[in-house]
Length: 253
Image (cartoon, rainbow, N blue to C red):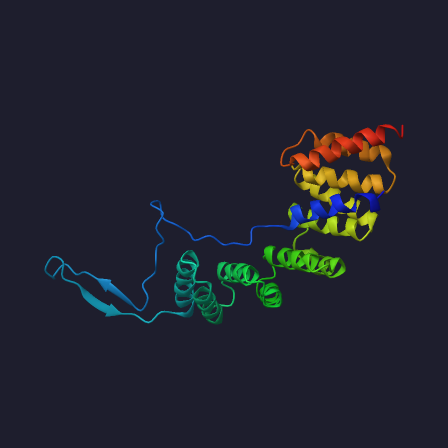
């Protein structure tokens, strides 16, 4: 059964793993980007004439410089100047390696120009620097999957599992890779855990049903597919699949 459902399973895997890879600029209420002062701060003293400014230079620390470079990169990105944006982001990360939005935006730009190996290197560094940030292992796993390396994709998620055992998105992605690798008992276990943590997310119930069906647990699969129809966050293709499997399983009883 699992082989006949591999195409759908891969579709579900991509749905689970494809988190947004674009970091959007933080905007003010009027939609404009707020920039930090670059190398100086202008202050107005009461003793001065109205409109007269005194400029006092203040050295910026690395974190402030990194934030400035990141904000400059956002502007370059919006202008379509990706090369300049990448340079600003690389500079930001050299000043503050754990600037997560800068690394996320850099990865998105690298992928946009198909620099896959550079993106993988940036994600590997991100996992080491910010081990509790789930996007980096999820994105890295996604890249390996797109490179037709499902075992490597699975290894990434397994290696970082201990830190994300309470995150249903992570568990669901892991379970689906187990399903693709035909490790059915583990797939069922982690889909079930994800469904328990996020009971209103129909994707996990769908995964429970697929794993149960592959294990020939017809009653468990029937119950899971039936529940899919009751939950939100499930698109038409997956809902149609669940309904088709219900019809097929009814023939087993």
